[in-house]
Length: 362
Image 1 (cartoon, rainbow, N blue to C red):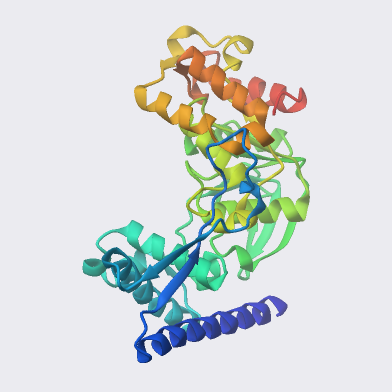
Image 2: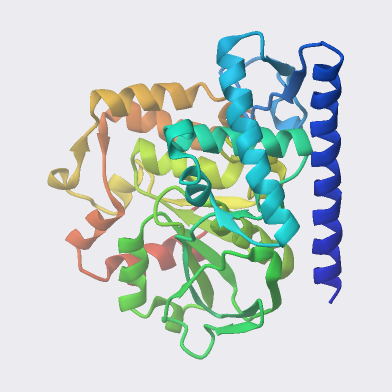
């Protein structure tokens, strides 16, 4: 009941902010002035690792001013206001819609999905809220299994009775209640193929844990659900990704948040996450043969060099940065599935237990 009251109060507050915002625009126009929309700029990292930056402060770093006098700004204001009208209706009717739903309401005007995505982010910054507060939801991609039980919007999800059965990560995370678990840790895996490997090996039957995958770059519901589990259960969290630039970027998205959602990073980042692997140095430790290694492409190298300049690596996780440097120096990468060269279940039976119980993580 309290959750419903809090949600209703939040909707009323946002609708009030929308009315106040639109009135200020109308007032400026009625007075013959060109209205300006001030949008705070956020960043969760800079490219000066040795500088004295404040990227981790969650404070805005200046403002962007949109005005109808500039053509590019006028177009952006047009899109922003159209999306705002849709958001207002969702809040008034207490209904939910996806970003894709919003795009198809004016496809000829919006032209492409990123235009809508940017407008939604702008609205979140202007109204000082998160995307889910606008009743704009993502289509959930995440999967979960293991020693966990919870209720979402009155529907019970009981993973404990069958720890190796998979369930979708809840989309309406704010409606998750009654979380129960006897797990000892949470394991995040980058890819669905690795998640299914662990499910097929009944990894959770013999290891008291919760396993979650975002199936690549994690969506907002997956990150919010993980954040909720960590806050409620206070368990150690490990992350397993491919030993390549994309895997490392996914790891940092969980740990530090994405640049696109930097304004909301404080609610999405998982500060206590441990990198479990795969490390470049795992090649020797786990005897991964040369034929399982792939050369870094020119794009891989460019991406890695750019990531090495992120300030948070040098300042907060220098050991992660060292492994990334090692990958670039060696010029090779490998997938988690390369461990199957030893046996199909080497990952679940040898690699993960040795890493977790041996404390071989960063």
